Structures are given as C-alpha cells and as structure tokens.
Image (tube, rainbow, N blue to C red):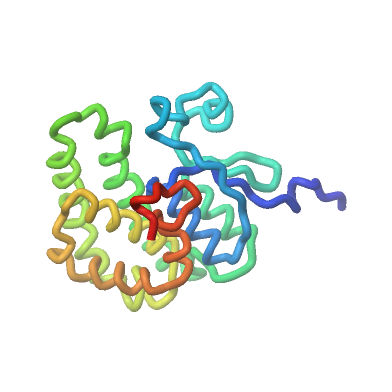
Length: 220
C-alpha cells in the first residue's frame, strides 16, 4: 500500500489564540501527543484575516479553526477532534461505551452549538453596545441546562472518570464565561470540573495565554 507524503507531514492548525474552537483542537492534539504547526489567523487585525480570499479558499465559512491534516483540510472543531481521535493513538476522546459516548456528544453539542456560537466574535460585533449583557444572558441560559446534566454524568470529569471531548469543550466555554463576567460560582459542578481540568498539562499548554499569537499583555 502506498502512503501519501501528506500523511507524514505535521498537521497545520490555522487558528486564533482566544478562539474557543481553536483551543478545543489544541487540547485534543495535546492529549494525543500530536506535534503540529500553527499559522495564526488574527480575527481582529486588518478587519479580520479570516475574511481574506486566501483564507476563504481554505475554509469557506471564514471561521477558525481550519486544520490541514493527512492531505485534507478540515473545519468545525468537533469534526476535527473526532478525526484526530479516530486516526491517532493515545487516550480515547470518545468512550467505547455507546451510552457514555452519546453523553459526551450531547454535552459537546450543547456547548458547541447551544452556547458558544452566541458569543462568537461575528455575533457580538453585530450586537454592538449590548454585547456584554447578551453574552451573559446566553451563557447563563446554557449553564443552567448544563449544570444538572453534568451532575448526572460527571465523575472526576464531565462523563465518568476519563477525559473526553466534553471536557475539551467545557474548559474554553468557562474561560469565555469568566471573560464576560458570568458568576461561574453559581454552577458548582461546572466550576469543580473546570478547576480539575486546568490542572492537566494538555489544558495548560493549549491555553490562550501561551500561544504564538498571544499578545504580550495577555501572556502567562
């Protein structure tokens, strides 16, 4: 069987230091021990580098991340994470048990589809002066649903005692909540899980404060 040279090349992550979706992919790579290169896409500079024709050819949605991997380009962070999980050795990011796997996907989708897009940069730019109140409202609304679900599914982590894609989605969302001044203390399960996950190296090295494009005043 002939293998393309692209299969041996390092993946390339086109992302932004503070993007939740980019951070998810960085966590997945770190958990799997996959080396990759980063090509930052500044969502603010020059009106947004994601809006260039060059980047549009890479990701027609003009969002981050886009990941060049194994000779193809993938976007949408959950699809990227699942591809990494299915093609790379290391700890499973989705459980083998069908019920646990469904719970991981449920929590991941709740965050990635039901909470995060409503504070996406493009959305809050359209909202304008009310962006803080808007973001707080929809994060609180999402966390009010997420907290009782996690009370049922969580062990040490979001679903049982193994790190999964659900945890990968949770930590960036809590970071966003804190950025928009949401009182995370109202959600004790979310708060506990986030604190436990931030002790893990994969979540630390992928943190927005430690990326190549992190501004100096935000660097840890």
